Image (tube, rainbow, N blue to C red; front, side, top):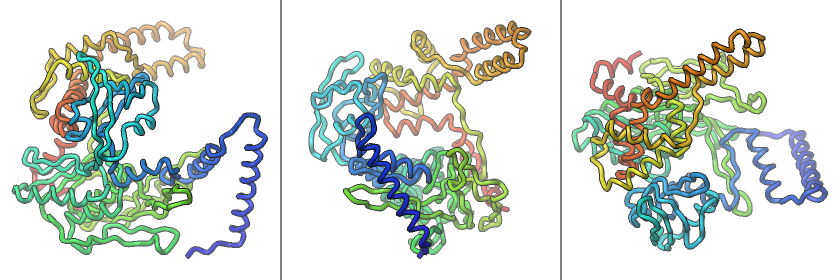
Length: 526
């Protein structure tokens, strides 16, 4: 137990008294009317924000959202929505869930829900209207391009999102896409690996890209699929003795021998980093991709009064080599921003085979792949929903397409897309243009602009000519994005994953590493 000094108790008591006085004065004498609940919530959020981004307070109204984060289960129609200029569209219906079974599809504009017009309604209002007890019905009126208005009665169901969004044999490799760590994540991965073993699959890939983590025990269960019973996977260390715990694998593994590659990127965090880091430290897998996020903090949920709760950071976790992968030091902030762990504070550790790994910077891949950076044109077309709207138009004209593995955007289809965007508003500023503008401002400040103005004019005109050809310059990139947007209209989340294999550089690296057994083993050798 941590001992508190008498001065600590005095400081707490003093500041609570000061806070109460301030609150009382604001509530009674502030010139405009204030809402007490809103005022206190702002104070709570401000206090917790000074700690780290993961320590949060949940009101009674937010309890359902938090339960969904932890459990992956909710009751509703099984679809996400998208707002475009105040209008609400179905964005991504889940396959074989109420929305899709009722015949609604991505791109349908929602006009009313149970007779209530939804234009300009907030995201929380839309969610509250669509969710409800399993077995109850909701009447949704939509406007479908080329069809007109439709009314559909949808029966809500309990929706449990799968942790393994996709598993299948691609190019003779057993591929598992893990998107979350809610209950049964370990079982889902175990079942997928068992299925591959029964099929005689000799190579495995576990994709943890863009997986922000979840339950710690499920991370242990997933590592246990590939690591024998009794291995230390992670230790947590905190302020109190009960926060200092060791977690070992508890079950018999499924496969400790088949070559395994784990995919990570900058959005792989928390439980994803425990899995990837433990498999790296124990030399059970080769990691491919980009540096992970670097979240080495553990949160505990605490129930509070009036059905409120909070998630609070109570410890830090250390993976088998002994390293802490936390990238930012929240106890060391400058102007409210946490600083990265200083290089001088980073320590060298070794994997079981003796390979060098470093703490304080997330999980580093064994085979680093340069991350894909989309062009400013592509980002603008995404942010302005133009790719989404084109796919909606395409879906209205085509009842079916070939499989995701076969579908390609032809040149004629791409030309049609280029015609479609000609009258659309998607203006964008390239990084080159931003640098030209900065240089121009600097030239004015340094009194050189008059001498260089004609050069700046020529440069800007040349840049505009280049931008006018951006649809040709970024043709390959835009074709890939179009393929993804169109395919998911027909094959949902499964198709969205399958269509990307052809152009995925990380996947290409996985295949190359797993095809060369000598090269694979060299990655695991000091």
